Length: 255
Image (cartoon, rainbow, N blue to C red):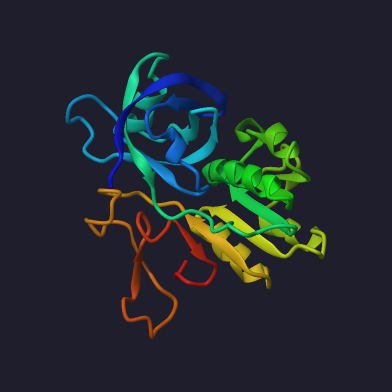
């Protein structure tokens, strides 16, 4: 059943360079239990913007859902101007999230880049609640883009990288994989495709990746967010990111 609601804005604040944190409440918040899913949010007034924006769920707590987004165009600029008490039209939760049921007493590494960081926070909270040890490796372009560092540190060891070296380690998240504790048993990653490709090729342990993608309908009807599978014998040959994903086992889709 498709869940659609006019959710009330409780907070919409700047937290890093062109990056905003929005807190919403509505009827379906309690159904947002699987980390890695997303909300499909209508932006603009009237028909000024046809496509909704898929925003990853960064946290769910006390009937409040948090999303973090970057201003990249007129649609997200409009979203950043929403005031407390206003409503936004939301479909969700959508997609298939990270499969963590039964994951206990493991050492998990979370690897995120830029706007791929938000869904890993809710994931990390869930994993810690299930008695797992969590190490986070988070990559940003520069110091002014870093967010949620303290929140991740509350979950466990957290390493920050920046492309320009202005904060934390200089370089890419994959540069730090070699220094991680050898007892890591599994990884979960979200970010741009080149980063996910590097992470998947570097690790030899099981893992899951979450793809960032512009979407059309967000419900699996329009085929706008299709990606190719890696298995040449796969009878379908493709996956819909909005429906089959955005989370996939590492190696299942072509990056």
